[in-house]
Amino acid sequence: MKKLLFTFITIAFLSLSLSNNAYAQESVAVFFNDACTDCVTYIKEITPLLSKYDINPVLKDYINKPSYRKELNTLNKKYQIPYSVQDSLTFFLKQNLVIEGHVPQKVVETLLKNYKELPKHNLIVLFQPKMHSDATDYQIYISGYSTDKLTTSDDILAYIKNKEPRVLQNSQSNNILIPVIVGAVSNSLHPCAIAVLLLLLTFLYSIKKGKRTIILMGFSYIIGVFLVYFLIGLGLLRAISLSSEPFFVAKIATVLLLFLGLINIKDYFFPKLPIHLKIPDFTKGAIQSFMEKASIPSAFIVGALVGMCAFPCTGGIYTVIISTLAATASIKFIIYLMLYNIVFVLPLIIVVFIATNRNLLEKVEDMEHRNSRKLHLITGILMVAIAISVYFWIRMYL
Image (cartoon, rainbow, N blue to C red; front, top):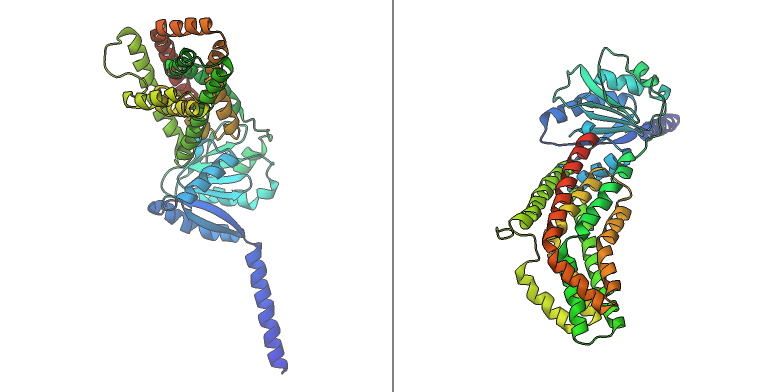
């Protein structure tokens, strides 16, 4: 009986000890590509070291499981990891310690062993992109400082302790405000949406609609344009956020914007040459049909159709701004998107108020017809300028 009791107590004690050890272990996310054999090898090599410091790596193959890719993008934004030190193999070891790539294990162990002694920096990133585990050099990024190169012979503890913790300012989000406003103003000048609104308002006067009805239908049209454009923006953000390289998407969008800007400039100097940025001809019948219904719901539908169909005209700037916002991980994205679209429809709002005076509306319509080519030129120049500016802004960010 005593032996049985002793055996039971021993088993219970061992079980409790094992559960305590398991509980003491800290699970950390490790994002990798299973097809990268060097990455898998490095994970196997460093796992015993992590276990030594009670760290349990949770492997997440973000290539074969898109939800892990989304999670990785979210963590990169949360930690505010610069794109220049992001790698295909990422260890989120501590609240402010991230390993990117195949960092020498000696360096990793030094930091884990002395982690509690380190200054409370917002973020420390070790980066080593070479696909092998015997590298002797690596890069280190500390929030608030520029990236430096170190070797395994350097005293990394002394290096980190010599850096005073700095409050990381999200200046990228603040700096993007100017391109957002300039881009929205440039897009708002494009004659696509303005021309259709002028046509709608003039048509309403011709069928003897009252001013109140005209204003309500004008705003219904604007809401249709605004809502569709806003939803397109959210859709673009969703698509771009799924990319593991959002800055690459931003660069592609910048090249596209440059091309579209040159087309607008071409329309001023060589209007008879093919390829134009305009509402597709096959949609004009539907727009005309809904316009002739002359009701508030039909005006909303016309605005929504124009918002969709005018996207080839105005979508270049929009895509660049959204892809740049997505790449910089701005937490104010929805605010910026709302601001962009408010500025975008501002000329339409002005036109609706002008419509209270029929004579003034006719003058504005005539002015729009006479200056349509000039608007193409101005918009084209602004598009090219924005494309070049955003390209160099991205290079500075990287």
